[in-house]
Image (cartoon, rainbow, N blue to C red; front, side):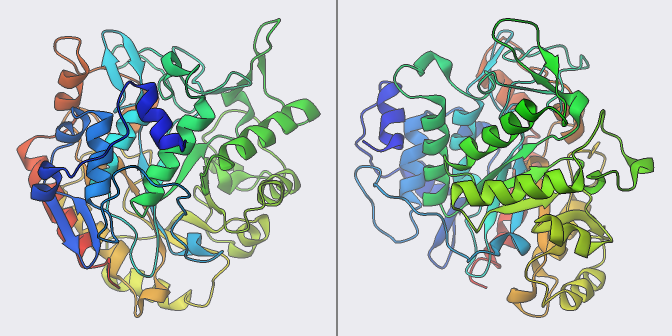
Length: 437
């Protein structure tokens, strides 16, 4: 039994799929590519997992409707260097998790529910989701907290499985955490999307859990810690993830430390070079994409490190600036800089018009589609958040916006309402013009 059907059965659903009329009414179509737009996320998040998979099947690009989720799903194939021109969309899977009272859980299932509203990959390049959280956060994992009480995703635990915010441990005996990740990746791939996850490398932001003792701080010079970090990431890649977003990558090896805002020592250049090489080698995946946060200016440094692309180099406001950079870097197929629509430090306040302009420049500013630069977006760039929160706040804190303690109320109140719907429609129209390029 494939892992998608195993996930359904683990949650007491049958595996027989049926066409979803609601999806057909909401779908945007660009050639054979289909997805849902003109929505607010709660409309998807309040549906069941079974509804979500029916929706994904209804949107199937080959026009066939399979009555059971098929075996042997393959990732969209854009060659080994797909990451150089991909669109990366970070989804804060913790923020959209189920908030039941003070509990936070099932962020991965919530992300599956949101998948139908993520545009599939284009003919010439991939769209890739980056999950904000995989590992347990150091303080309060599995719980939401007051709106301004710190509960940072940037502080993680290794050697302690995966976050209770994300994985459903209630069904662990029926489907393992690794199988849950595999099911997620197969559903995303079937929808025409690649997947990846964010990781941190600042030593004081990582704790190592010891089964018979207190947690200890991570140390890059400790061989056991080093192998734990490496193997933890290899295990995840083996479930189907194809990209890793590396927080603070610019500063690897002590580079430009005057602008370093992380906490603790970073791996040496040689250590990180070895990690990236070994992840590719041990998994047998030569096509993996490694994305470096703020890896700007010295392109040879980051290409030789093994990165595919980096963020923060190009001003996204001006179409011609982005286009000129795309033309200049058109032959750089191992590493090239990327265009940020927004990043994980976005504190809000940007107008919808500004965001739409940035998206337009990120996905259209080039001479030929093969020249396109990578782009980086946040969940808020597709699905606007409520007025009094922002991307960075939801990375640092984990509030519930539920008015009655239910997940449904949290989902309804987390995002903007009718203006958010109209904005999402406009984003859908922008993507609809790119998917056949």
